[in-house]
Image (tube, rainbow, N blue to C red):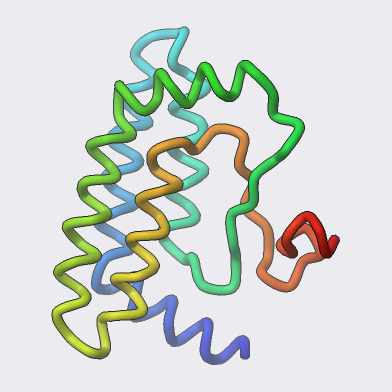
Length: 137
């Protein structure tokens, strides 16, 4: 399974991963301009690392994140989330035009949902017990 993840990650990196990570890094740098938005910049850089090499890892919600995460996600949605999500959707639709690109396009659609509200989420290995749905963990 690791060989498959490696091949998928290399293809992902070459076609979309690098460009998406650059987009997240630019958003992160913009968020570092104001002191109040530094947590958004940190979240943006964390997700930039994930979109560089996503296969074999997953994003899970932290159920104890609380109200500050919710408020932060609302602000993130307005400041950067919508634009990054649009980039994911456009890229995903473009990738879905080819049969080989469909898995990568689907991954982009799932990342668009993460881009809308990244706070209160954690990146874990796919085989980790934390990656299981909460009812099974």
